[in-house]
Length: 262
Image (cartoon, rainbow, N blue to C red; front, side, top):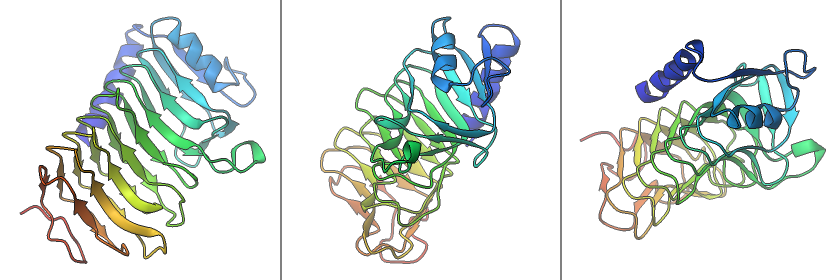
């Protein structure tokens, strides 16, 4: 929680000191850009920057390839990105972030879409205050090349969400203060290379859905993960399934408010 808030404050402070360029995206383009990707590329070519995105719905798949590029919407439900291509927002650069917006990937550009909403592949990235209502694939996914991603204060409200809420294969990722009520099969999947993942202070709710079998799954070779202080429940099968036997899972499994710290 504090990590995400402090990171945003530092980004704004850097811009105010003129270390990084500042750009604005609006639907009419009257403050600079009307395409998010154009503003992202502009900042990336100049060593990083802050992209403020105005209200409205933007039909594009945004890729942040360069380091130190950060995009900030006008609010969840106010700034909406509907992914086109393979994703909604993909972060490949280091020290990048996306915050304060809705990112959906089921109805992109008026057609059925099956991509991931948020992809974090760079090092030390962050998704903060992201609302995801619709995705046929994963809402949040981290790549094996990533290191120390932070996913905080994000919301998935719909139990009928078709993909996993989270599929992480990056080491040392932190998931805190999120509400994940969705998932197909598994809701929160920690893959074999997701060592030292921390899942703390989240609501992970199956909502009694007909396809959400498992809440949190720590896969066979993922080691030294910490899953604690969450509310996990309402799944058809096991709420927290620790398959490797090498992680610290503070969970009395079996229904109700699980995962209290003991």
